[in-house]
Length: 451
Image (cartoon, rainbow, N blue to C red; front, side, top):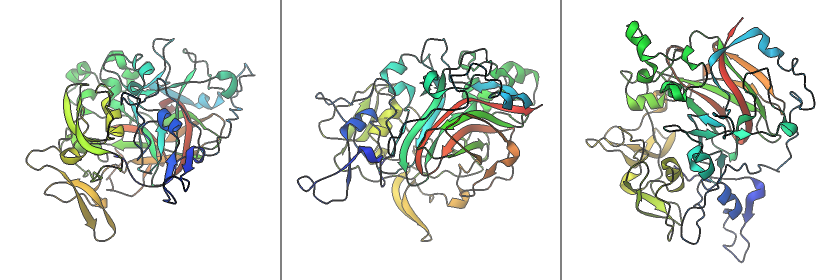
């Protein structure tokens, strides 16, 4: 949910003068930024004269920090036609058929980072772009049936340069992530691997080398279809490979994370893979932000759903907005504070025999907060999920090929320790950033084998 503390990009903040609120210490954000990024943390979205939410038609990437101009990449300099030296790092590896290159399909449409999503901490005034592809009217029209994800960004090759290594598909789109300022833990973009196996029409080219089809499972009793197990076996590869760079004022550190059957909070939530190894925790905010009220709101997409939400007086949000966007802009409140999204129920929180409520809880004086829980107390840190296996790289403003062997991945140590790094049961991959400003570009994400 929303609401915590501190700064947003300096260029967009205005301190109230004495003629306004006085010296309250509260930072106010320019209306123009709110219209470009309506989901700024802790700030109600802007509305038009009819009370409808103002949402940009296409993704906007506002400036961060001082707004320094991006110098572009010297690697894959568009002024040079021969990129054999730039591509030499690929000579020693074989890449998996599973790959996300963020190119449009069919060509001529917007590139979609299919089945990727974003998350970020609760720093007040912080924001992260892009939002979901179905949040923007223009990119929504480019989504195929049952598809979702993040919009890719079409890059001006003459200015920034792009990896071009003799691929059969010209490279023009990347996944670009920008935002800040984050003061708690940061955030990331995550991809649940099994979504690539849900239907042939949604698969990246060659994804079948990692997906177990129902036919294969029927022929081999030791296998389960990937869509059933919700995990993927990547043990046949040596590591993760991708191209990446950063903008001039983005943090240089970028972490790559893998959640397994043992560490994933989502799998602990669904309970589909047998006994839960770790426990979920869900923090909450017991009241609405100032300037909003807890009122009933009926959403018509994907089905009619009525929930109590924090909505500014006089606002009349569009009931057809994407459910995930509604959850960000108008957080659930009252009896629905701890419930899952309207299109994604939470079996733990919504259990009629033991409903979760937003209540305070203190862990031996070391940690106190409001948590969603029922008759059982919230999970202690040593029992919690989501401490996946991570490794890190240091980005420059030049494109660089990174290959991270699985042997260098480690848990951070903030939650329950897994007994092993189970590469046969991997749920998701994520690119994660820490505190500060985020501004990075990622392309051609795959797994690799050493030659």
